[in-house]
Amino acid sequence: MTETLTHSELVQWLREENPSRLEGLFGWADAVRKEHVGDAVHLRGLIEISNYCSRQCGYCGLRAGNKDLERYRMTADEIVDCAKEAAAYGYGTVVLQAGEDYGIEGEWLADVVRRIKTETPLAVTLSMGERLDEDLVRWREAGADRYLLRFETSDIKLFQLIHPPHPARPPEDRLAILARLRELGYEVGSGVMIGIPGQSYGSLANDLELFHTLDLDMIGVGPYISHPDTPLGDGSWGRPLAPGEQVPNTEAMTYKVVALTRLMCPQANIPSTTALATLNVASGREQGLQRGANVIMPNMTPPKYRALYQIYPAKACISETSGECRVCLQGRIQSIGREVGTGPGGRARG
Ligand code: 5AD
Ligand code: FES
Image (cartoon, rainbow, N blue to C red; front, side):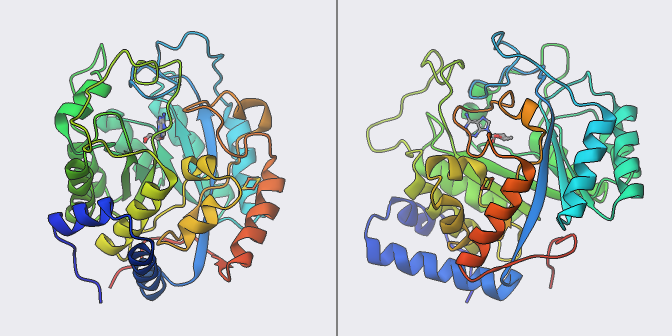
């Protein structure tokens, strides 16, 4: 039932517009999801621990060049308190995410991870960017279970265009970092944005093939959302494609990619992302869950910081408290006949 799709089949599905054929694709992805990871929807509490960033990614509102953004860094106590709140809600995992912030020192974060691992039963996922090897080692030793680093696009030229190297560090290869994370014993997550200006259908199909090749444990895919205070958003960086080649950054395209991701990686944990919910606040998250996804990452960031974590504008749910998010999500999950997962919800194998 789950064979891998070929490159040309992937391109064909990405270009498919026929509603009944698309219903077929979504039903297929939903059946594969049910067979391999079941009906549980795992909740991962997302704590956005700092919005400082030393990088200049062309699409991201946290980029160092964005001088208008007020910056914050959570204290260790604030982070541990949020993690305890997540545990009290019954979430199995917390995800600590930040810009690539070297003001967060390796040993400091190792200590925070150790505290969470000692004081709660939670799995800890880190999403801290392209950090030095010694930090990745130290955090793993401190007990971190998983690491997320999206490769954003497998098109090297496009990646380089939108992602200038760090001014003070040697260029890093995200695929090499992903391999290293696996070697260190992390569960490894990656993913891409859908509809980046300059992203073609063929290149998005390559991304889906790479998900399979890398045998990723977690895969996050969401629409690219234009941020006016970035070079990609204001049109100053760009690589126009021939007509008909550009992937649209739409809700409809995101569902296709979620479904195809499930078919390429039947056992992976796949979130229905906040970026998708931002395009359709009423039901984007539920529809993602019905087209292959099995994870949701409710925001646990303290309300006073939330609005400052502006990766892209108009992010869904920034005005909600963590408690409101929990109640809202539980209702949404039950409304589509699924159940909230219990325990850490690691990657299924076998
Ligand atoms: N639109 C959508 N997603 C974005 N990300 C960063 N900027 C944007 C944007 N403008 C995603 C990237 C990154 C993740 C944390 O957020 O894929 O890896
Ligand atoms: Fe956050 Fe609904 S998911 S308020």
